[in-house]
Image (cartoon, rainbow, N blue to C red; front, side, top):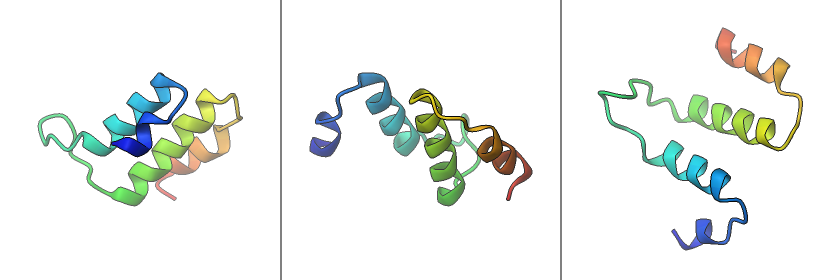
Length: 63
């Protein structure tokens, strides 16, 4: 966890930790790490103000 303690934005830190830690089958049935990484990147880019519309469409279509 030392790596994440250096993150300046606590919202981003919570997002990163939550995405790695949530594997409760009652809440989360997808365990595809590549898909999870794609969603995390989309969320982080969105938080930073980048346009993520094309990436989100590809994610939804499963590409």
